[in-house]
Length: 251
Length: 347
Image 1 (cartoon, each protein chain N blue to C red):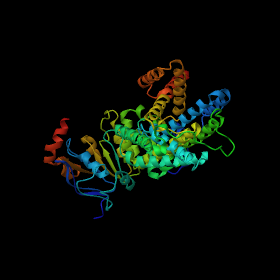
Image 2: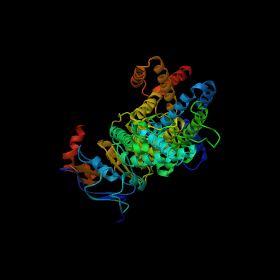
Image 3: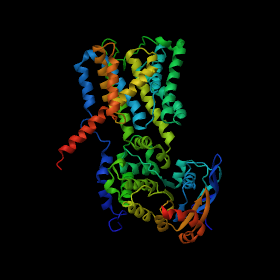
Image 4: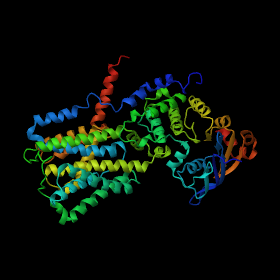
């Protein structure tokens, strides 16, 4: 078996007595469409924070293309190809949509440390940012400030910033959270159109989205992997239905 | 979607994208606008119109430079500091000590030395302090400045303590233009030129990709980590440059006043420049100019009319600004301008 794009071995995180992640073995392949589900407090966001380096694990290892990145700082993991979006928008609210993406692209290209030449004289960065907005159907909003955008479009900018980093691994933390149902199709379309070679891990509560999107599903409960399989297997798993799907269908 | 998007290869769509209003705005952002020469024209007009106020004018120019250095750190990078006089004082004492002890007093190279010393202080303190943010950072920058002030006070053998270092002799610039305390023409022009150079530097920085990343840090530091930005390194770099410019302002102050004292390191000075920036509008480049002019002219005339209670007027103004105009005088003018523009536009 070839090395996975991203894998974890016995990854654990303790906050005092609380085990937010327990012995997680996980594998994400290039081009994968993988979903992570679980009830509230199952440790899904903790797991994302461990993968991106926001948190350091108490035990275990994280490998990116076979290379141990367990102790690599957050910003450096981005350079290695791991990008994420946030459950709650973390955008540059006072700046335009284009500037938001410009910041991400210029960091990736290495233009962001340029001090003397103006930002406007980097047509490469501007072109690429505009193209990205174009592919996400955000070009008409490019000059608007984030604070002037409807919430659903702000969620798209989250994705645009992450894509500006040209990731190999993309972690989407509840991309459609808080988006009114009338707008949620724009997020779903954007997810459908993600570049095929990227390994995507999505966390979401929306079962329609998860079952439409995922080729594999991992179910987490109380910090540990409870079940893993294809959507069919997970849908047919009586234990999973008991702990999770049964509840979710009411909400 | 798939029918309209053809992003690869052709120059056609690429050209269209760069002509998009958002792209055009970003491409042309750094270009000189028609009104930008105004402050410099006014400053030169001031020289001829008010020859008896040139001492005041010199002080004003130095304050603008100092406020500009704070704007880079506070307004653009969002570094919340109440201790910026630490660098002003570091620059002032560098010039003062060198000149007082007869080591070195040539004005322009002295300013460069002041910049270097202030930058070293900024780099060293920034390396430690910029791990923190918000109120913690505010308190720590304040403490650093007060420590320096007390240090300068206790080392009175060298610094003259509370009395400072009087009657520095500063040689003429290029050996020609003399500093005359009674007719400060040279001081004024000299300060204006230094301010202009400092302004060009700050202006270039804020419109650069580096400046854009500073704005990103101000707007959302956590997101900047998540786009792979070396946030702390950027902040330390910005803080060091800001400190160097503040040091130049302090050095200028020492040279044009021909003395140094503890007020250069005081909370009073740090708080004043902070207020000036809030008053003018921070993160706006010209806020430093507008704020310094408004503050200094107002305090000058209020002090003349109400010698005992002039600070009350400034206090009231600041309360009004804090309540109704968070973005300062420039913020008010910008929103007025926008309102006029939308009224003019036929619907």
